[in-house]
Amino acid sequence: MKRVGYVLAGGQARRLGEDKARAQLARGVTLLEWVSERLSPGVEGWTAVGAEAGAYEDLGVRTIGDRWPGQGPLGGIATAALDRGQGWFFVTSCDAVWARAAWVEQLWEARRAPAVVFEHQGRVEPLFGWYRAELAPELEAAMEGEERSVWRFLEAVGARRIEAPGGWESGQGINDPQALARAREKAQKILRGDR
Image 1 (cartoon, rainbow, N blue to C red):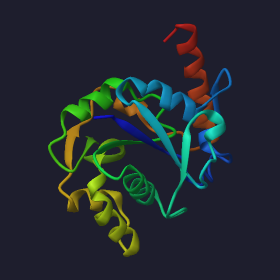
Image 2 (tube, rainbow, N blue to C red; image 1 turned 60 degrees about the vertical axis):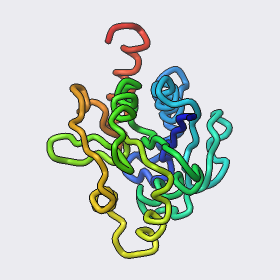
Image 3 (tube, rainbow, N blue to C red; image 1 turned 90 degrees about the vertical axis):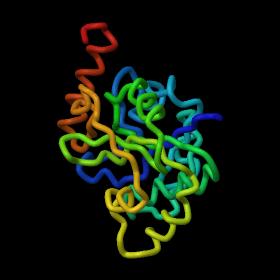
Image 4 (cartoon, rainbow, N blue to C red; image 1 turned 135 degrees about the vertical axis):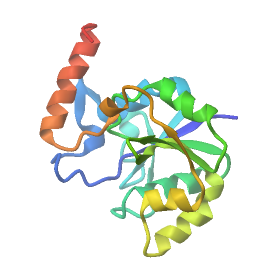
């Protein structure tokens, strides 16, 4: 079974002030490229879910348009499920730059429900997990309704939540210019081997 992944890259990134997926992290590498490369050992092929189809194909990543643009991450997950059709798919955000391929594998091994995600300090982390494409009808129904909370959706479908691994806190997103500057500094150290 081919393990495919979807990078959610259709957010508005108002606080960051630029297209988050295209923001450069280090040596001309964008956040989208960094995340898909870093997590590639656990996923065989990547697709970005963007505001427009084709938006990131110049970066070497197949890109589909979010069917519910501007409606939050549940719409991106629903778009991915519809694109996948059947089987499992992995979801992450384009700013999960410190996530590790081992974490993708850890969640893969824990698949015993229609979706499996981490939980960190009592909070569900829905933008780093494996989902069954067969959830598409429920996802579409949620998007057509009033309740578009990813957390509530996961609870309703009986998703499995497992405790996030050590180091998870550093896997959080980049939402403003200051966070991007810190991430760039850390990435430069990693590339130099300073860790």
